[in-house]
Length: 314
Length: 314
Image (tube, rainbow over all chains, first blue to last red; front, side):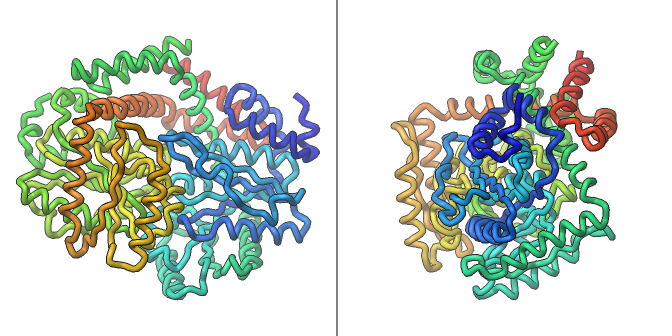
């Protein structure tokens, strides 16, 4: 396969390649294997937090500053869509009129589709394609629903958690599992009441978090993204965290750890594809009747399916 | 195995059996196979929604009403815990002083642990054990983080989504994927400002949702759970939804569909256990060095692991 156009930042080629890679079929695997030796120069930033915290606004403003510094920015916007309808609910989100047409920005929406996971695999795959196509920064933005946040952290060098004073107290953030994935926090809409209290609660919790000499102690950056306040500070803190990773010689180690998780996901995804197809689906439906009529345990049926799977992959 | 004590609602046996089942090992599978023919009489209710919406309070109040009606209530409280620390953050949550000691109530906290999914499998397993132990209702309560909500819907006959006026507008709820899983909504803390507006926005969105003649059109029940207001109405609506499922002859069909997903999860879980152990983990770490030093694609390594896996399960 020839990747020259992709490496030369041809937008149509990039868009087409991402679409191919998203399919997750054999061609997709071939592409990802083919480009891999060029992967690695883009810095990947995850932007996450609860719905309504202003993640899109921050992504947009951050992009504008990066553009001023002559950086190229790839944006992956993760839209969780229902496993029940399958459609991309926000697929055509009306966003980013001011940056969407800039030739140094490439925006891609990604639907999470289904509850079987695989988002971080997909995000890593698409980020790899953007990476070799010459983007300096890749911003991965989630709409903020639990699992997708953890998935994004798995694909990012620096993960930012955006909160607002109304996000509730630090215990709520802790409950949502946001504490451990954050490299730093942004308290957005910090001109609203309760901001100081929220920041101080967050600080208290952070001191309880496990840390050793290699740990980057998360800062809390105040911002009002809609008024473009605090965005410089956010970028500064991203770069500071990057410096920390390099200084402590853990930059590659962290990527290494994430690659390990990624390989596991690739293997599991591969097996799922072998397992579930229209044929096995039909046979599952047939045997399912036994669960109802003969009260056979789902665990017994699972054994049968596993035996069939073994025969199949021989 | 003898399940008499379990079937006779012996609490210590129940607690021990749940612990065994949570391990997910061969003994766990044997137990779940053994009890399966008795499973099915408990009605399962999922209670979900964003953090801070008051799900615990509603669970508690609902339990009290059910107790007044001489029902036995099992509660499964899902605490998401970080895949990074592994510990059960809220494992010993201080809750439910007023119902926790009632002999007709059994409360179990469940940590989600790790990002590999499997929560709905675990929730189904534990619910099965409670089911055969004589509980009339099983309430599955999440702390409300994305994936766990979808998982809970996968284990429940009726799923309630709890919102508060401040949850933001209906678009935020839509983004969070809550619209499709709700059989009905509770607008909690409905004495707060913005409640009427939030309900009306929710109604507008609901009319857009796909529905046919078998669809139960979700109601929106107003409540102030902390003052015990609206709880009767919540129970009434749960039973109304149950009636609807039975009337339309889709009660078993819905369980059937969920069983299909459950079997898939069991098979995948089984395969994951075969795949990842300390041996394969070591070999993965060794080959990972190649990703860094020789720039070998994670997809290539995944192929190798898959080939090793095939040889292993023969």
